[in-house]
Image (tube, rainbow, N blue to C red; front, side, top):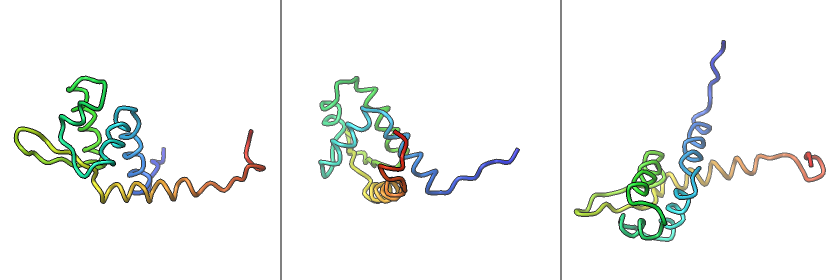
Length: 108
């Protein structure tokens, strides 16, 4: 069986999409996008979920490269990873703009 090869762009989009695939993570991204930087305590106060759960969501977003964090004892500061944010914007824009169907030609 032939193994399918995906482009680097397809793999990166999938990584970003997976990280954004939970409403709590989207809430974190929306919150952080409005900030210059943010401490963990601020994020936890914004979401109606347990602190440990917030930490897990932050880890997923950081692993995907959408956010970055720095330890500033006793807290960790999180902010948008601007380089990957721009990459995600570019990749998804190309993806959304690639649809060739018009309203008249698409299934209803």
